[in-house]
Image (cartoon, rainbow, N blue to C red):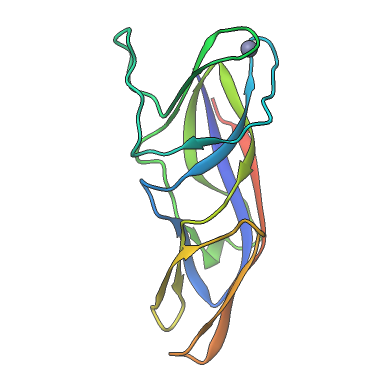
Length: 161
Ligand code: ZN
């Protein structure tokens, strides 16, 4: 078993907290088979609220598919309770927001897409359904008469076990 954490980094303008609509957030991942080295060009949806039951009495997983090249059955699961918020205090640093239990595969690319939520500093307003496909987002908060935004979104995967 290998545990890989997804870390993000961003610059936040007037945002207190940035987080996903867990457990319905879609982690869009590209995966690499560790048996044969195949890196599929296809994006895969990994969602904590959507599980695939295992036939052999193993625990359910959030991704279960046979490698197209070598035929091995690979699995990946979101580890429950590892979702974290990215806050204004984390700015400029990478922070883990989710951990994956990887069996036979590793995530190699992540596309943030929509489903992000931002809590605005001072106003307490919540913006939902934020799309970070373009790695940035700008809005105007009328309660505090200020622009709010997310800039320079970056990510990386780190093997922690
Ligand atoms: Zn393979």
